Each structure stands twice: as structure tokens, then as C-alpha cells.
Image 1 (cartoon, rainbow, N blue to C red):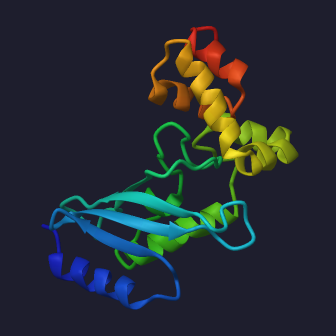
Image 2 (cartoon, one colour):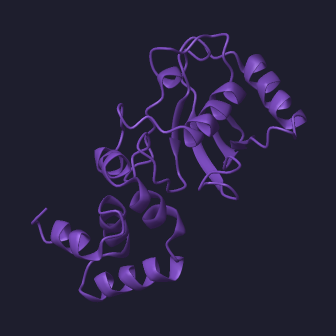
Image 3 (cartoon, helix red, strand yellow):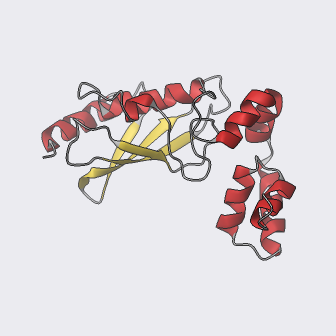
Length: 187
């Protein structure tokens, strides 16, 4: 059975700690359905961003880890660019009831600071990170958002749904031709 008292205590702790920058909101008054926010770590390509995280707590919480996934798109080896799924040990087999939602959110922030490409959630991103680090940072984070919108618009003009085109572009690291090839079934 869910320990709602503990969840409320954790939410108060997060709300009282403005220094960490992490926040959590309850969705529709359901303490098992939350939305977290994690600020991008300083001096990283994520600096200045605010990353939303879907959080679901099942009946075993805190004895089972929270189910978390990014709803904000993140280009990172340990985050699926398609679904936002996160590869982080404390969200799987290294969870302990001593850990909290705040600990988990701060761990996500730390993960953004130190990618682990040898244990990837997204093989395409990890491959780019390992084989072409310079392009990884430039393409993923320094790219002008107008360029992305222009590529997305061109693909949509060819008859592809925006969501489909956006996912293909993300999976292709912003490479319009590779995204088109994947959408056409060639990749």
C-alpha cells in the first residue's frame, strides 16, 4: 500500500528546498502521478534548460523505485530520444527505500552532467557521443532551433506527420536526409 504520508513529506521537502532547483507538481490531486522539473546543470549544454519528468509511483513505493521518464526532449546517451526513457541504476536495481523523489531528481540532473555512453538507453546518441564528440555537442545543442524547424517543415511538406518527422529527426541526430531515409523505410 502506498505511504501517502511519506509522499506528502517528500513533496514538502522539495518545496522547501529552493536551492536545488528541482520541483514536483501533483497531477489531478493524485499523489501517485507527478510532474518533476530538473534545471539543466551549470556549465553543460543543458544549462539554462528546464527538463520536465513524468513520475509515477506504484503501490510498492517507496520499496519500489518511481517510474520516471523525461517529457522534455533530451539528446543524451542515457535517455531515449524517442520516448524519454531513462537508463539510471537507482531507477532500477539500485533503488533503496532510503532514497527519495528529490534524490532521484538530483540524480537525473547529475546524469545530464556525466553521460555514460557505455551503458546507453539510446544507441544512436551514444554512438555519436563516442565517435564524433565535437559534432555531438554542436549538432545536439548549439544547432539553431530555426534550422530544426526548417528541416521539420520540409519533411512535413513531403506528407509526413509532424510528430513522426520530429522523432525521425531526433533519431537521426538532426540529419534531414537520414530522417527521410528512416521514414521511407530505408533505415
